Image 1 (cartoon, helix red, strand yellow):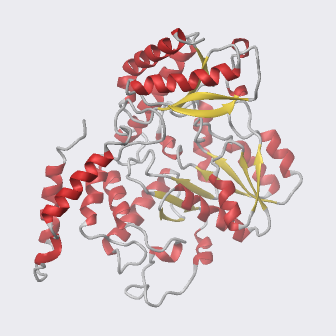
Image 2 (tube, helix red, strand yellow):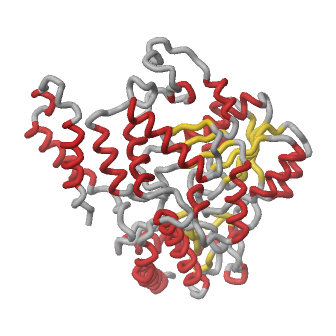
Image 3 (cartoon, one colour):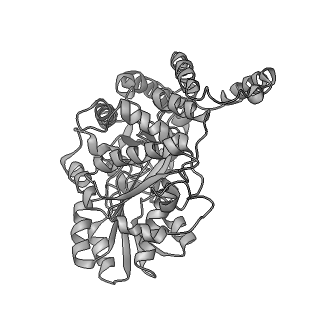
Length: 453
């Protein structure tokens, strides 16, 4: 089940890496007690079996995508060096690789002049973006949609910035009319446009938000942690494609290579269109930044120690799979989206289910048809368990019932939210596995409905 053939490649690469350090005195004790290490590693393997099979296409629940073999191998290879990309002294080669990899990500959004670096993930990347927003407009409010990731509100609490949520439309996107109404009251420093919400994959109407920026003068931050790479996909809805094309006009961007970028956790990235914001990071560390007059990445990052291995893995992956519109990597994103569209069409044609709105990216939400929202929610949980017993792993999300456009199938609107089923079809293999996924879901649903009282 797990890919292991690439271990031979790792052995060859290790020998090549080792050859570059042959002039050093031998250090025979570096390996440690191999017999004890073997025992502990065997125990570790046993414990890791308690995980869900995140690597398998039958895992279609949360946002978990296995790293590409080249990323896994490059990360492991770098561990023999264990570079720290805070300062050039700790990560000479890996810092250069980070700068090159980040430049390629910036180029994907059409930026050649920018300031950016990798982070431990989207949370830290968004924190840095909102921190800069707060520095540039102190005391002003940060706005994000009610379907934006909860981390924005928490970050604003940490940074002691004012935060407000903006209502969404029936497709889980920021409501532009509600945003404009809030903007007329003033005191807005930045608006977060979510380019792929966590729950549904919805994309906020960025072109309209940018037009409002011209009138009201706020910063626009694009939280593209999940969806950012879909700027390369060729099978988006035209409205969604226009939103992604507009990212180039944003003031800051966050993207997570450890989601669709095929990287191990944690690997996030923050980009600023204006390199001058680097002045807010300025600090002195005479015991750190002394070996080179070149830019040390710690000079433009709030985080100090950062894994150089993450940069090495990202660099290697983008070397193998360039971020090109018509390339192999872009095609894999198209496969994910095609799987989601196919899955949604099957749900829409089946009276057992209430499909959500058509997916903009590769996340599909749906609920079982029932006489009430309470009954539908209960059925979702039972189908979730029945599918899991067949090794098909989905997820459950609490979403507003207005996201499901089949009111005649839910005549008793006894509450505003429904516990629905959610699938993230982010593995390219999901397209080929969809028939089997569908048959397993259908079998699980029939079992639940037959025993439903």
